[in-house]
Amino acid sequence: MSRMLPGTRALRTFEAAARHLNFTRAADEVGLTPAAVSYQIKEIEEQLDVVLFTRTSRSIQLTPAGRVLFDAVVDALDTLQRAAAKARRLSRGRTTQLRLSLGARFATHWFLPRLPDFRAAHPGLELTFDISDAVRDFEADDVDAAVRFGAGAYPGAISHRLFHTVVVPVCSPALLQAGPALKSPRDLFSRTLCYVDCKPGGIVWPNWPMWMAAAGIDDFDDSRSVAFTESSHVVQAVIDGGAVGLVEWELVERDVRAGRLVRLFDVGVRVAPEYAYHLVYPAGSDADPRVCALRDWMLEMVQAGQTDIAL
Image 1 (cartoon, helix red, strand yellow):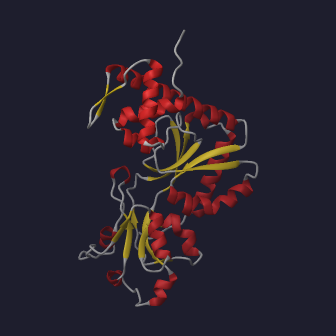
Image 2 (cartoon, one colour):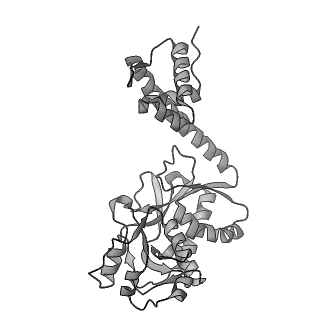
């Protein structure tokens, strides 16, 4: 009689424990206590009649049998994840649902403000969202399309360039009213200056020294600048009224035109020319009417919103 195999949840616990070689870190990942992880591992060992780990007072290691099972479990879980994602996509393909992956700042500042326009244009198509900047694998992850910032080369996928981005300084109307006046870039020296500290694809995102250099200032001291990891935090600091922030013009243009933010000075720093926002979807989806509807609408929105901006 064949032995009963452990369930998927137990195998995920084992995979995490074997990868971390630490029950506490595995417990944090799978949402259990270390004691529960230990108990599940013991159950698997008893179920299979094998020893998976050698334990000492300071560490754990996989046994040869544990290594064999770990390699098989990694492959099995990956296969199941890919199959489940494909099944969900196939199921959605027979409906009017489309799952789109977006980075948080693109979702907040570009897509969601335009979502009512999309719904009006395509009332029968329902969008759901995966909000993440992480690279998605269309074969494994449950998404139909994605918007990503990069060079546009995504193996096995079709990529449509949407727009590049220019970083400009903005502030709140309240900050301007509070004075003193901001008549030249040097007047920013006395202000709290915020920016995004990141390196997408290894490139340095435009910061205040780069912007000041573009404005012709070579003696700027950036020691008082405040760095954030997300542009949404920069925008929030600006909206709260106490800071001037470097943000992407394309993602705050609507706020500037509506008077919620004020753009300062006609100087911008363009991110590396080869980098831009792209709409990306699997190569086999180019005839999917749901994907085509999203693609055509986004390209139309981008074309309608294109403006010339001073660099």
